[in-house]
Image (cartoon, rainbow, N blue to C red; front, side, top):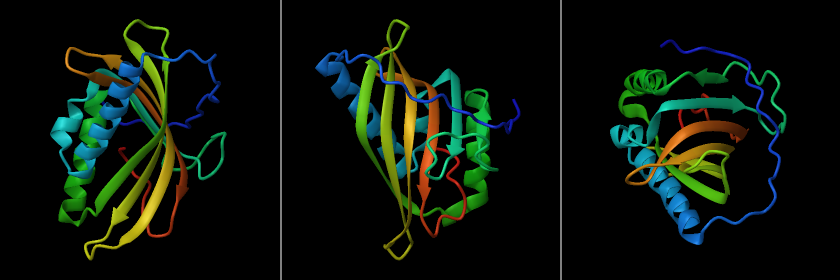
Length: 180
């Protein structure tokens, strides 16, 4: 399936009435997000792909501090499925070659609520990514809010939907990160 560029207009986040999820589920989801960050930081892209559901909807919007994205710019996109996301990610990795900077992803402010589907959870989290130069200094960073839908699987969870709203891109970031 081909990548489709569209104007992403995320729905404003509306807090649901506070209904705490089971502390064990909350902890498992938090560990899942940390594990995903570790896979990406250590470039284990095949294992990361295993965390994506077959029917994933994945979108990124470069909001740059705006809370409402209405035509956020050229870097916005929607992938209509797992194959399109992995195909685009593979092209970017081949194009970057060995020049990919090291990264460290920090996942914070994890909020978990029940989705309207059995065995699915809506998760809002904040993400801070530091790019580390080959000399070892942090040369750029960016932050985002992620809105995920996670589905329970036999072993853990699968990402069913991800909407990434990029808040800030600091100097040194050449392009909007294309996968998170």
